[in-house]
Length: 49
Length: 145
Image (cartoon, rainbow over all chains, first blue to last red; front, side, top):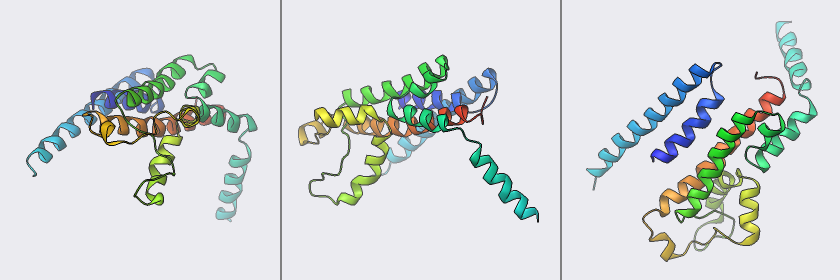
């Protein structure tokens, strides 16, 4: 999941925004979102039989 | 009148795309990263193309399988969406198909703990390369700096 999040955020970050700084921030934000949403969903699904 | 002007501007924008941009897009699809290499965007080529290559080979290494139209037991139509995603990797998919590697979907392979991760990484690699392709096309067409 972290690998997927990292690779996807590299491409999303590189494609979006105009400046390098903005790209870094956006890439990190996308990475964090993937990780947090993935972990939250996995905990929700853990309790569902 | 405004509508007419808008339609005319849209036509002009579509006509402005140079033929080389389409070829760059095709190259970007065929070999991940090539579209940016052709435009001497080295960092983008390494980062964006590299991400697709890593995603693809890690997916294969994890035991994921690629989709084609030969289905066993399931409807062929259900194989089309994942196949379109896999086809995004261009030559990587075509070479795998030609050498017959990565298409096996046997129960032993499916029992591996990383099987589904591998499948998803293979799907994602193709989808990410479609984004690479669009990015390379936009740069070649002058729509992006």
